Length: 96
Image (cartoon, rainbow, N blue to C red; front, side):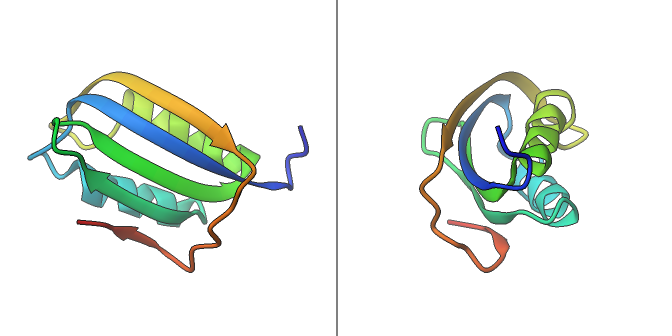
């Protein structure tokens, strides 16, 4: 897979990920990686992350989500779906 090609990731993060500043930490990490998209809480207690960027940057985000998140979080699963369909976001934000 071409490392320079822009791709889209749709991720659902499960575990203790709401009420622990998970979204703001994810936003900071995504911005530091040069990604665009959003992070938002889901009504079932999970967090959704939609990110677009280069494959290598997206892989770094996945690795970070699996082991880091926010200091108080406890991630139990990360469900990932890759796509080539881009929305072409202009920034990375916390969505509500």
